[in-house]
Every structure is written in structure tokens, then in C-alpha cells.
Length: 248
Picture (cartoon, helix red, strand yellow):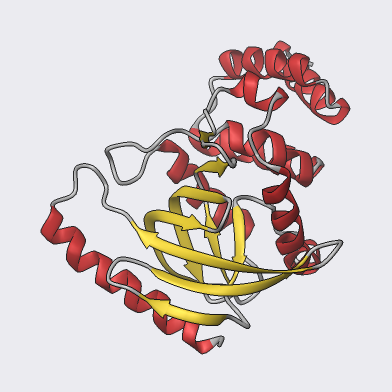
């Protein structure tokens, strides 16, 4: 077994054992030695996700996201799309549109690449959680995030409940859990504004049914001309409105 194989074996062992400090150190050593391409790195992260989807999405995925970049597609976005196309689509699922924007509810906002399919809304990128006193931005520092996740209990409960509705299909079709999923069916209180679309979904948690108001907002990439974005924004809102109204 090569040195790189030994390093990878240690990373997987630390991940399985949830020895987070040691996992981070082993991961850094492995990535430096392996010099993986974007596709190889994506495949490796998918392997981690398959080993323990819950730990991966609660601990690792938020830590690995970069802040907004000036270019339309950064390396993280390319990774998301690669994983989605290769590992992440359900039987019969098709991508309708993809854009940079935010998905918000009462206590969280996810900003970054957003993909709309005929089955669901998938949000990738950074999360912001709100406390009663202030907003706390999730910093993309791997070590601190793995140990001290800024994802609130509220968000985790919501995501677990949402994922529960998808989990059977994901397991049946061997689809990897990657990104934050939001239903687009049985929606209520649909409203379209000039810059965003909002709607309400009901989510079954372990204790009660929650009514969650979602707001989807296309955002302009820093380098994008305002006139170009204004036209693109309306096209995206039209696509969202058409699909969401099909599921009212």
C-alpha cells in the first residue's frame, strides 16, 4: 500500500470514529500528498458522504464552503454540479435552471449556487444563522467549523425533517446527500415580488408540524452588468413561478 493510500485510510478511519481534530489533520496531510483533480476530490468527498451522510452534512459540508466569489462559477460550484450530475439526481429528475442566489427562512439563509429541478430546490454554499441578538456568519474555517458548527439546532431539525421526506428515494436510487434540499410540492401562500419569490411549506419534525416560509432571491454576481442581471432575474423568477405553481 502506498503512502497516499495509507493517508487516505487514516482519513476514513478518523471520519468514521468522529475524531474531528485528528480527522482534520489527516485530511490536510492526505490532500497535500494526493494533489487531486477537482473530479477526484469530488469523488473522495462523495465517499465520505456515503459513509455517514448526517455527519457529513452537519459537520463537513458547511465547513468546506467558500465565500461568494466574483466569478459566476468558482471551484466549489463546479464541484457541486459535478457531484449533482454524477451522483445526485433521482430517477426522472431533471435540472430546470441554476443560478446564484439565496434561500431564506425565519432563522437561516443559504447563499450560493441554487439548482431547481422538477422534484426539489437544492441550495449549495454558505449558511447564515440568526440568533436573537445578531447574525452569525458561518466562516469557512475547516478545523473550527468541524468542532464548533454554527448550524443551529433549529436548522438541523428542519433539515432533518426535510431530508426525511427525500431519504427513501435517495437510498433507493443510491443518490448521495449533498447540499440543502427544499420541497417544491404542496406549497401555500405563494407570492411573487419584483426581486424574489416566497412560499410556505409544512415540515414534519419529530415533535410537531412547522409552517416554514421560504424566500428565494436571485442575486447578481459582482462582475455581472446590472442590465444583464435584471433580465436574467426575471427569467429565473418566471421559471421558479411556473414550477412552484404546478405543485400548489
